[in-house]
Image (cartoon, rainbow, N blue to C red):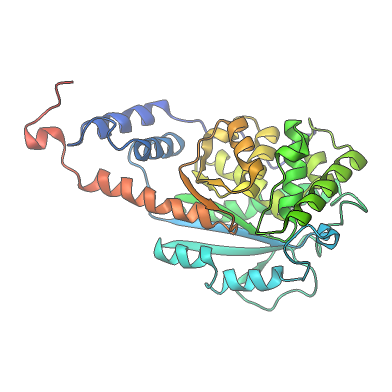
Length: 350
């Protein structure tokens, strides 16, 4: 696989910052390591940001929306062209991710990277369209190799805009009917596991739809024979523009030392692609939650990421990623307001 021209070396993880923040947490007036994984969360952020004085106030969720030709094969809860409606709902502030983001002081930016039909007039929906939807993967590869690279570049550039605007944390989400089918095909290929291990119901679909989804994934993988060692080839033959864009956002965040919070299965799949493109990226990622999709945990286990939340989510859009901001706010409050042991003239003897 050729190196993508716009990629730069990864920002290093600071073990010094991690150790310093752990020492600071251990010195607070509480049992040592008493806040469990909340402490892990803060320490991961410190390592990525390369400072024990973690900054989490400015947060931005990048949501990429697109249509996928595979929906005509009956793999989703509906084959109606509703992605544009979902996109408007997110952009207008009325989707689950939007409502939660308001509660957590998180800016949501929505990008059209491949909606079908005419270009939108919604001024809140940012036009980065590559083309009007991917191809039906039973009829043709999802996209060309050039389009796959373009989708990654779009995600990279939009993440860079947020980083240059001063964001402390990046979150990613998506909307696009049929994309869990495509993610399942990517994961089965790259992890070399049976399709049955990674295909599940997704967004509340019937058993017959799941069986059809299995057949579609198996047929497409066999037909196009993507090279598992070449993530661009896999993305182009089996992927989605929103998956490519999130891959680019992940790569950009890792280069610039900005913690990136993954959402569910779709984000995890993009992380798998990003790690294959630029090994070491995973150290800069935070897994928000354990998805309802069966393939998600396989991917997180492969990447060595342990999710923080388990709410049986299958909402997409970045919803789970935004939920984790509450826990980040909790640990920041602890760091800002708790007394130290010496403030109380006290120490633990064990």
